Length: 77
Image (cartoon, rainbow, N blue to C red; front, side, top):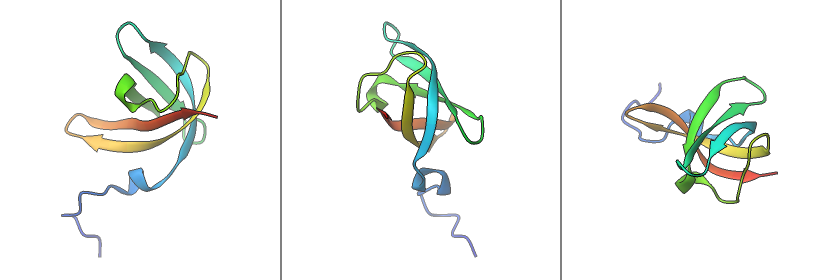
């Protein structure tokens, strides 16, 4: 049985690989496409552990907020 009261999402347990689709440093946000599932995740500059630019290959984990899923702990490979 799954504990629905847990604040830890199964999405956040996994390190994913993706490509930065675009990043707007002046606005402080961008999108990453997961290489395996092709899903896209929003990220903001607070989630960056290393500098990124468009088309960089990155690793990231997934977090969940009221607005939905997002990329966190983003770093270049």
